[in-house]
Amino acid sequence: MSTNTNSLTNRVYSELEKRITNLEIPPGGRINVSELEEEFGVSRTPLREALNKLASQGLVDIVGRVGYYAVELQPQDIKEICEMRELLETYALHKSFDNLPSSKVDKLKQESVRLKEGNLDPDVLRRRFDRTDEDLHTLFITYADNRHLQDFAQKIHNLIALTRHLNERIDTALQEHLRILDAIQAGDKRRSQQALEEHLDNVRTQILCTISNGGDG
Image 1 (tube, rainbow, N blue to C red):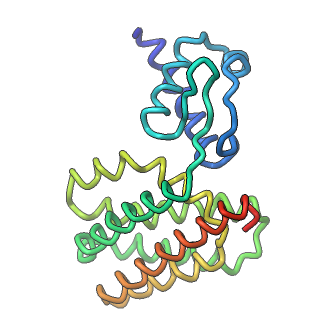
Image 2: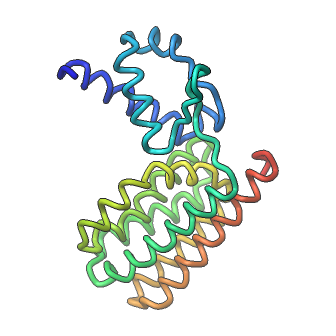
Image 3: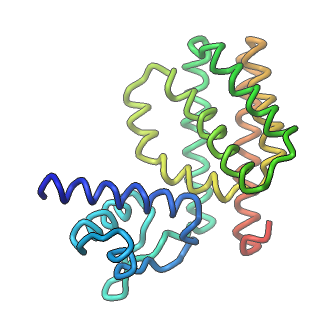
């Protein structure tokens, strides 16, 4: 693949990755290749390369002779992703606890309080919550001082991002984030891990409820 084609593939991949994980392309929604060719002004080759890469990461389903579809996670998928996430992040918090920069913890707490008390437009709240949620959960992995853990986390990053956008309980999640951050600030490792486990258990339960009700919450 030429450098130019590779660049086009990466550009299309990044945009489609964002649209799928933030549900702009709904779960199970068909991805119209012809429309994307026109929108991005690219040939079919970089577009198919991008879609195949997304398929290899579990974000796109390829149906032979039919087309490409945004992945639609089933309850068993959600359970398995959430189980892996809990194992990964609770271990990461255990390993990173003494290395977490207080400045970053303080910043995350301040932002969480602002979001909880800010009475923001729902779309603005959704975007800012998702960013803060990702920053909090990746903080533990970043400071766990384990390169292989980071590599593994990156492999399931997009699936975790997709489940993040299926989580509709923002206000409650912010309360749970604050419990985690309060425990970290207090230097209470055990309490912080318990708070994280409870939070991730609740996330899993809510997402399963959401998809079983057809997205009605």
